[in-house]
Image 1 (tube, rainbow, N blue to C red):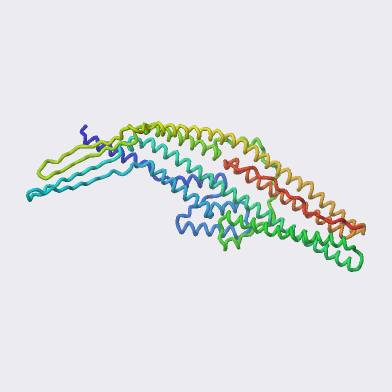
Image 2 (tube, one colour; image 1 turned 45 degrees about the vertical axis):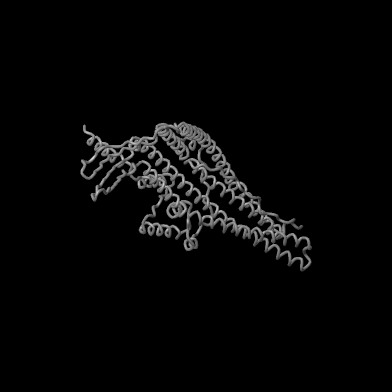
Length: 473
């Protein structure tokens, strides 16, 4: 085989290999849509065209026309959240960069023209050089494998971002609905305290109530008004947090309607054994850690191969000179390892690999521990919420019924009845908060099972809003 034929075959092989490194952004998005649909029951929209943006806006408007459910909140967040789409656009850019890293650099053509004048005659020297990196060609298969592993990392990172956005939207919805539901009961507390304070004022004015007794009723009303103001602020803040999580603009936020109450508890909690049976190999955090380890190992292999020789260029040369036959040949450029033997780069790559290996092991440990911790919080929150629903609230209602019978029989006074009503409302508020904590724990458990590492939710039930003054006799 002639030298020209060999060069042609080499160039053809380079073009063929470079053609394999195609953009995979569409494939990444397709896999991401499949993951979100299977794991979250909602699709991730791609807002690349005006038609897609109009279609998404119409879908959001349709979902906002009715009181928003938790699943609809997730659908809006995945379809229209600017923060999520910014993250996915960054992932697309990183995917394009990974594709670029697996492509050969373009060959370089150099043209040189020199003239020389002597005794009225002009001679021309023309040089033509076509060069490309033979080193890049030799390492192309390894770089293509590294690029593919990088693409896998980016897919898993994008899936983690989608899962985080969905979890944030669901948790924000739970907090907003619970805060709105609590606000209604805090208003009832304040109205009952206001009526009690007004009645105490009138009874004192006719001499049937002492100054101390009236002051106690007035103090409770003042405290109830302060609690109601804090509840209003908390409800507004939770609603705005939901608006941010969904990515709604001002007009859309004004149309946002929430249901009056949280969903009922499920009939039974999730079984721990069933939750634990889900393969850890399917978790996003474990898969991402393993992909990073594999990527690091591939990079380590390339670093070993390029530790001493990190450049090799081949160039074909053709020079023409006036009155002389053309000169043809080739040039090879090879760095000489006289000062840098590549040992530092190899040691760095080896250390990076060991760090990635230990991080992968720690991710597996954390995944199992987080799952046990989150399930414990989930089960505790379920038991507490069910305890309030089945025990405390019914008992308070029975007490209220008995107190009403006594009041009708003139065995107790109106202040006893009002004080008991306040205590009952305080128990209902605690029940709402226990129910809120359960649904937050449920969202956290879903995220941890799928592989989004997050701390177990705290049980945030507050003290009952009672503070009833001493009942008069």
